[in-house]
Length: 89
Ligand SMILES: [Zn+2]
Image (cartoon, rainbow, N blue to C red; front, side, top):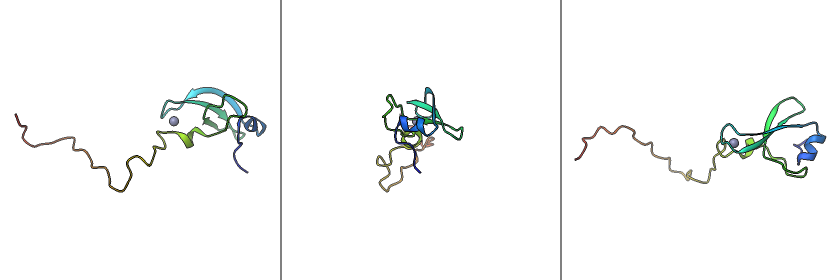
């Protein structure tokens, strides 16, 4: 069995809308829902009953940074925070 496809199906499946809040990680608006097993989960905002039900955890840009940005093979060089070379005037 899969996750309900939209807000109406979530209610039918026993999920309950709690409140609108924001993600601790990325501070985007999320809707907190309680699952039938009494877990509280952040969902992408669903303004209508037929809005697609998508877990914010799967969408969060902070928890899941876009992989196509800088990971092309070469590791990012570690910045040297302390450079002990002589300071030029
Ligand atoms: Zn987030």
